[in-house]
Amino acid sequence: MENKTRFYVLSKDKPDAAYTNAVFVAKCNADLIDDIIVDIHNSGLEMTAIHDRPEGSMLGSYNYIIETENPEGITDEQINAVLKHPEVRYLGSFCVSEK
Image (cartoon, rainbow, N blue to C red):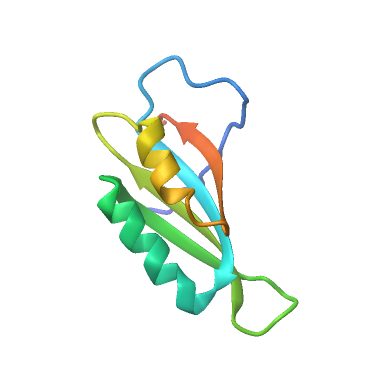
């Protein structure tokens, strides 16, 4: 297995190429993350990674960083389907570059 370091380049502009990945952050209790994951799946996105970080102020409250992908490109409808949860924020979309 090979270790890799990942970097995100953040910008308010959409990528030039058709973007295939999107990142969301969910700040919620652990019992709510299942509903968010189901809506990600139902929107046609595939979850590729989820990272949890304790929120720090209350036991059982986490910040989840959720990476998704769609080989045909991420649509606004898919993003809005996930954003119907008030705990979720959309960080942006990106193209993957392996170097």
